[in-house]
Length: 224
Ligand code: CA
Image 1 (cartoon, rainbow, N blue to C red):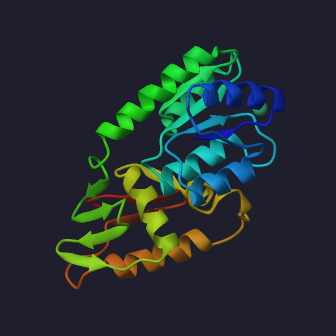
Image 2 (cartoon, rainbow, N blue to C red; image 1 turned 90 degrees about the vertical axis):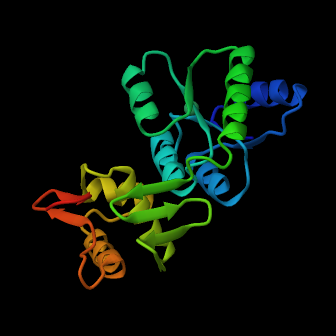
């Protein structure tokens, strides 16, 4: 388990409590380290505080949702951050706990997530929309019967668009979800990569199902 929390007192308390229950617990004390470790190391569950220095918890969460959709994230929020809690669940948190919480509550949530993860192990790992399918575990993309080879960034962009299939997403939303916090808002990188993706997905008689919505952004789906 990875615990991403900047308050050493809480980290100490949770780490000791969880370890006493037999969990192996790693801690990251800021958002950047937490995001990096969650993406590059193997954990069965992440406990993520939303209020973090550096990279904010919400940014870590949206990055994890795109790159590791199967990894359950339990969000910790301060009392009263109602909007954050709703936004957190919308952004794909598996569950959330409001501070202050007891160790028993956290243990119950962690165990519940591990049970769900075990059940869902091989299910719901494929995104499908129009005639495009994305196997999230094997990172394999097909259009109809044909395999489409994508770069890592193109893959993340496609996953983001397909998770919002039928909705208009702005360039800013795409930038922060796919490129994270290190982006320059003036960049045209989104348009460039949408262009790459369209070229790879299109077939002679069938354009890519990615539509430009003037002055707003893009929409994945059928129709114009
Ligand atoms: Ca904090």
